[in-house]
Image 1 (cartoon, rainbow, N blue to C red):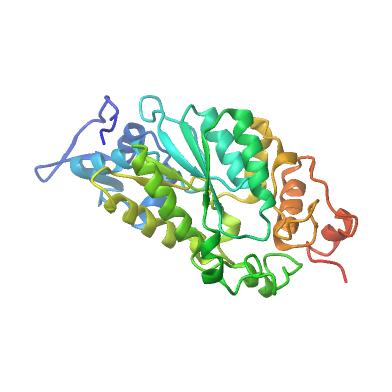
Image 2 (image 1 turned 135 degrees about the vertical axis):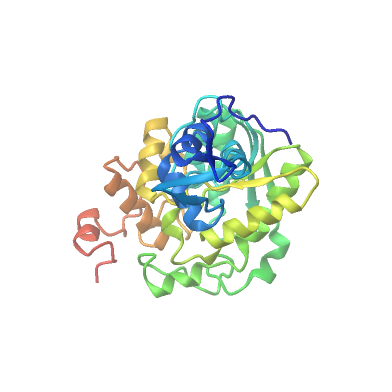
Length: 325
């Protein structure tokens, strides 16, 4: 895979006979913010550089690695920061698309940025299969190629979750509560990412996009930085054509995503979140509570139809988003 490098290199600094670029030069050359570069460095995903007279220096080879990482559309930790001129370009991507709020905002964001998106939904026998209807409708409206991978046969192998086992009730409450662990589907994201990676490689795409966000980490281990970094590395080794994982929402809150979606004109009313999968959102399960909280914190009107049995929003706010007794 070829990449497009910036053309204007920063000034060279000579120290002990070795050529370096300083931090400011690398930031400008790679088209990323200082905060992004510092966070990449703290995570150990770029070279640490060398400190010299109160300056942080990078060798030319190290700076090249950083610039190539930026060119690959590596998301800025903390969220989307815009595209530096001459650094980013449009990509062919496969988006794991559930039809939910987060992945729909990511779909609109990718289209807004001019990327060629192929959307992949996964039917793994989930209770809330209603989300797939929303995915089909939105992709049809946007003219986005959309496929649904039927993995219903795996349902007996993914037992132990209230999302795949009818014998287990979907718990009510906030994601911060221990009962929400009942909604974990064993290895779900790894399975979805592997399938998306296979399709992406067959389409000669350059990335798999994935809408995991910051609020997911406490409950779902397969939404953590450690997991996504490991999958990113595995995808790059899976084929002779390099494929990478793009998770631009990994450090963004749900409210941040709602604000972005609102600015992009996302039809939130067509998205589906509720794990119970009824005719309307229950307003009580973890994902419904998180959805209601996100619209409230974002200051965006929530167009979602909730069941009559759902607690009133004022009650939820007064009880710190716990279900009132």
